[in-house]
Length: 114
Image (cartoon, rainbow, N blue to C red; front, side, top):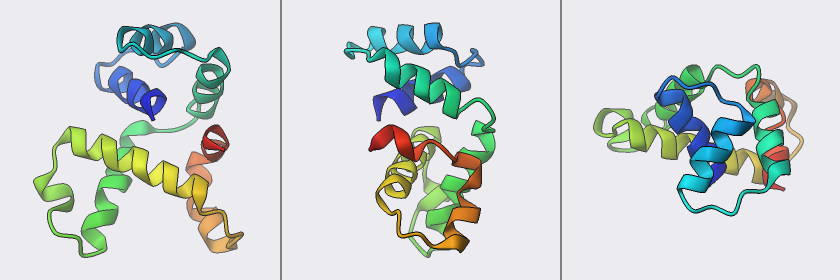
């Protein structure tokens, strides 16, 4: 998860999400950086609009009837929601064609988590 959070920090501060910047953020946070995970994340995020992904992730709890969702949460909650949604997507591979079409924008991210 810390790799995703580091990418979100870079995005929020307007910095380019590349291997050097991602590694710097992770090292500053005291994470033992795995170069292969950094490379995989940078490659997976290459064609992803992170702002759009954060907005969609924040909208899911509100649409599902969960109290608080996007209205009570700040940017940190949105980032946590996105990370949790991506982890759930990686774990929930049931082969549903309709779900695969919805997840096309985050294709490849699930492979980072097993």
